[in-house]
Image (cartoon, rainbow, N blue to C red; front, side):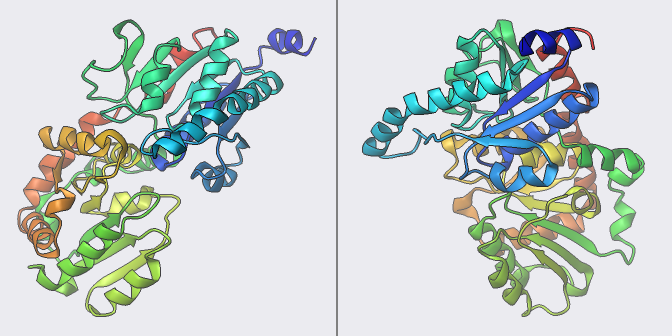
Length: 381
């Protein structure tokens, strides 16, 4: 009776499954926001694990969240893989229970091992399903789920090598409303770099971010680079997101460079202003970071995390570098001296920042979320 009432009123319900890192969570948030804009009377539910970033982030957005007990298979010992496989039936039952209670119109997996049981269970019940893969190389879960779902949404630059051609769209990655609104507030000129800006008294502004989890090697290299950098310290301004573990240590290190204007945060929830004011971003190469760089048209030095599954951050960074949208430094090459030379080069040649700004914008589709919803929910409002 309740299902009939829901169909009669046209209520739409979107279930987002997955998470773990910002690269999975933030596109899911963007789709939830776009879904509720399109269907104000609809409901959204995010399902992940208590260990993932979603448990910390989603309550701030006011989205309903539930958790299942599931463990990863990739990158674990043989014994732990066997334990994970043994727990899959329990995860599947939890997924079926959530689906039966929430009664979603459609289920979208955003990557991460938590998405597997939900998307598979929804497909088994005949519910419309899809997956989103923003990385250049898809993760194990999405590679397996691609066979089951109705639609696959890939990031811009996808080369067609991993998913079935008949149901895959290279639409791009949705971006959170706060980032989209930031680009709308500022004029086209303010999002581009003009060479004379750095010839004036304006400080050269660096944004350092290791992603949602932080990155110790990146933090250490940035601090070491300040000893060698060929830029007057009084001309530098740094905004540094360190991650929770390194915040105090990085703050202490900056005290050795009192002429530099520095702000240090363990985590920055809303990054739009941080991106907008930066002349150069130094970051990991996770999907969420790259999507936001493309949206805000920020040139970047990318240091891909070598421990990322299937080396997907390396593939992401190579994609951007080949397009002239970023400069890549491998972790094995990352020293303070080398990073200082790269930063100094961009300071002395701001026209290279202009070129990268133009190139990175080609990876942004401002209508990605809306186009995904058009395919996922093809019926009229």
